[in-house]
Length: 404
Image (cartoon, rainbow, N blue to C red; front, side):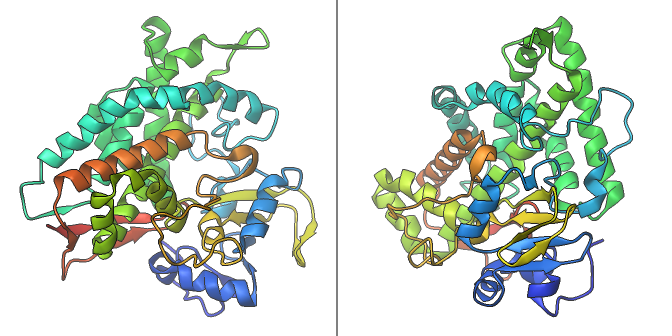
């Protein structure tokens, strides 16, 4: 149900759901940087698209003029209300801390950070490694696989389920709900289905943990107090939904894009086999080159930025992927240098809303690539098979046939 009207002028009528943008946004960003570095569109809602590193990071830090109360890239104005008619905890808080401004943002983020600290994430490594090896056992002896659906998409959802203390048997259902919400945002019925399913599930889980607490994030949040009072169920519900949505699609997209890159650059996959100590730097470079996430900000009052007359209620799409391809910020940005040392990428955002789960995402990406490269010999894309990409809020391969 995406807008079928083709884009004629990307500077004045861009569409992040246009098939050309999803398939090859890089060339579009390159053109815009030299002709109109902050593009505009009136599709769905008046929105702006910065493409330079300097602009994206400056807007990210200006929380006075650019609020995070409405972070959905699509469908624009339709996200001004809760995504589902729902009788339960108050949903007015959205998905804190990502969709909150201070002070709500400040203390909800503080509650989450310990769960994604380096120390905590190190404890998830053995489980993640075992998970990757188990998935590889299912297809590594064959001649081909769907590296997206059969591998990349299976890893983060199970790790997040472990953190939330919910059954990994729900992984396929979680995946369906997340895709409904993020990939099909122009389809209100499908978006409703995903949001309703996810919210109802977590309401049931919160009620269960009131009487059966465990060593998990949901139980801890139920036991926390802020200013001497228990946390509102609606806030806990929003945090739980955020951890699932933000922790699943973003990371599997990064893993899938990285495998796609290695499949199309055999010299890089061989180098990582020959120089395993390079992996940490390579992960940062792959995150820079194939940053999956674009977020939105809501203009709080009429303001002119970079000569653009932004109006109250407009959206600014925080184009972190384009910022990471800006030649003013990165030397030869379209070249993937696995050993790139100077790499101040913003794949995890910038400012107060920088991704709280970045340590976890890095770990999952590194372990997933290490185990794949250890188990699978040289691999490439399967000729004659279609590769499909999702776009909009999160860009990444959804079908990725490879042979080995």
